[in-house]
Amino acid sequence: MATILGVPASPYVRKAMLAHLIKQVPFEIKMVPPGSDDPTFREASPLGKIPAYQTDQGTLISDSSVIIAYLERIHPENALYPENSEKYGQALWLEEYADTKMAEATNALYFQRVVGPAFFDHTTDEERVEQVINELIPPVLDFLESKLISEHYFIGNAMSVADVAIGSNLMSLARAGYEIDGQKWPKVSSFFTNFMALEAAQKQQATEDQIFNR
Image (cartoon, rainbow, N blue to C red; front, side, top):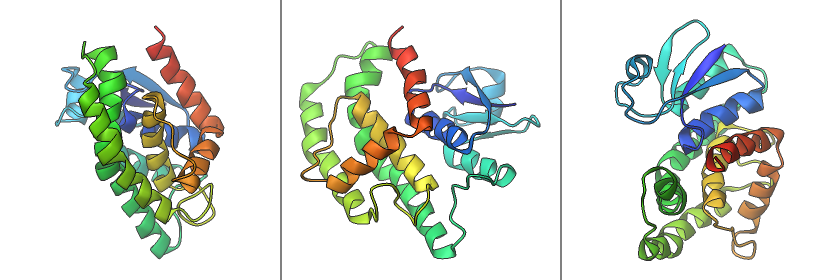
């Protein structure tokens, strides 16, 4: 069985876990924080970033996008990459947007309200919170609202890696107490409601609840 090395509360580890859950591929979690000196982790992730991954064949790789691409190759069922070339490119772009520009905004709030206080003895900077909520998050949600083609999917009529990456970031916002304004961003709000109704998202949420409720 493959092993994901990291902390489930990380949005990037969450993304890799969600992909496995959606594709119904069994996996184990090895709790490893970023920068760990664990030898297996350091070999898999020389940059010290999570998630890292040990395949069921023992191969070591890292990075959530790489992990999901590998997973798709060996488990093509419940595909997360569109067959159509144009839609494939769009899905990859939205995944990249979620991992970079979107994550810049969502992680800022997630750290201030959740990760920092829970794991780093950090006191929430309310001025920074207001800046993130007022300046960083709205443009991201505006962009996503413009890209959604349905209340369920960003690309085509099936779940894709774009939905997984974006949904993972939206879970960070929800954990940080941010509620998407359904008047301003009705499609994004509906998408997230439907995303969280997925069995995979509910299982992921339950796993993270155990961490924060310890």
